[in-house]
Length: 358
Image (tube, rainbow, N blue to C red; front, side, top):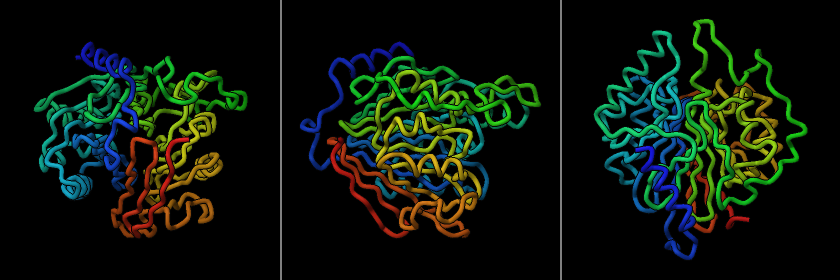
């Protein structure tokens, strides 16, 4: 399977990404950032009609997260999830899989293989997921692999604590020296290191194992780095920026200050930054400063953050859930092959259009 994935990616490189002229003018890649209260559930609907879900939120809460995912999937006409990508085996990312699978078919499971955390709660969480995974097709991915979604290019940037060491092909700026590296300040062990043994003896946190992905549709580019840590993200862009620029960036680790250093975020130069935070998870004040200062970027939030001052949050029109009542509104990105895209807030139907790629 791994060899097949690499061959498929070789074919993509040989023919290049689909050009805007080769795509239907009306065809879009639609990306739904579903509110799972500070976890992740990002649903991609390819122009071909194939679907990919990255993570499935939490378990429990009377099936809240699974219900929200299914509601969006049915709303857009899906009858199954073609590929479910699990970034890592933490409860806010993989916990909702059993409940989701009981309500909606999942065909292929994509992940890093197995958990590296050994405490009983982590093992139980993984066993519950693995039982569901065993009923479908399973793909273990590593950097450089491609997830074969028809109509879009999905490349794995990181998995199982391994990071890609080669520039993204065809992406503007990929491989160029990054002048921001000179100002990088690494996190200390107390602040969030690259490696930190826990009190229960596990050598790695699952965050460091995250499956990170780059999704391209023609000239449109999207970066999702899961919950990778601050110092790991540095290695993507220093001394050379291997990722180049991206039109949309999903904040790493929900906008917590353990991730998302300026050396990465500002090098990506996203035009829209989406934060999948909750009221009191993510949206940390230091993170808000980083993304607000990202050149030319708008910030869109799934929730208002109570961890930051009101003026540090995005303008209210750009926030899907503004109160403390659990309303579950989503944010959608609808992208065209020329790199143009529209971001829409389901709470107020406010949208903003971004032009073709620079």
